Image 1 (cartoon, rainbow, N blue to C red):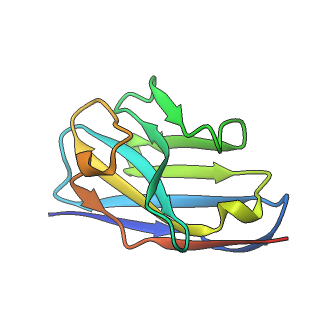
Image 2: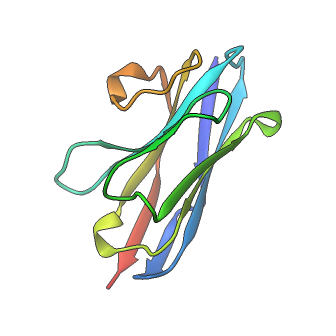
Length: 124
């Protein structure tokens, strides 16, 4: 069974940076794509960033484009989300998600496995 474990959340001031990590363990897919999502208080879960298996197709939500960077280290079964120039509206629980295959999706319903989430709080 595939398991995901996020780390790296915390409290940061506006303008600061954080790097989230998500490690895949267990019986992994032969190929898989990864996505980061977030859920802010009172809001639905939304797509943040996604990367395909070979890391040559990457996508971001408009709200984070230019500030966040997703990357993956396939050898380490780990995907990262570097978050710079953080804003209070980035405050949310961040989740990583995985699905077998080579193409990433922006819909959370497309993902098979989810991490437990990590809290990111940005103070103004």
